[in-house]
Image 1 (cartoon, rainbow, N blue to C red):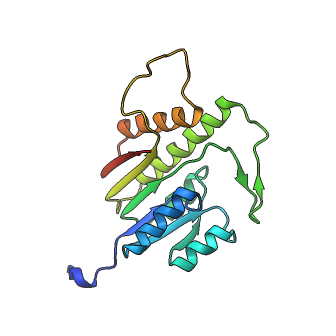
Image 2 (tube, helix red, strand yellow):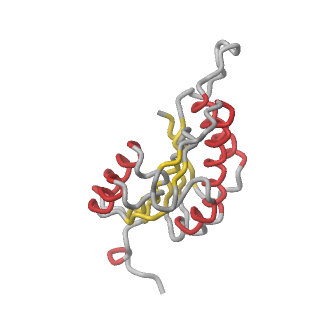
Length: 179
């Protein structure tokens, strides 16, 4: 038996790294358009997490480095907005930031690529998912004009995530949003 459209709940959008500036903007906008929003954060007591809750988001603990937390957080999602970060930081269970001791560019790039891979694997195991949006960085599909100059690590990590998305078995519509 199907439920009439006028009584179905609004689609559920899940935002990773929701307490980032971009995540906050996404959540605010989606909530203003009457979507249900599950905002994924690592610290529910942070100022931004509390603001998201006040706005009406369902604030949920999940870490881009913890695939099991992502799989749980994506349960029932209609859409996912995937945001990763280059910082390499993590959090303790009580919410304190633990800065990475390693600030090596290669390490930080791999950290962000791993986040994207975990998010993508979690999305692939979400049967309800209808649309996946990957936040990336500009390049317009072009090859670099000067290959002797490396792109910033954050850009390289995002582009590697794009390649993984193209090669994935994700069984829903997807979009790459380049800033």
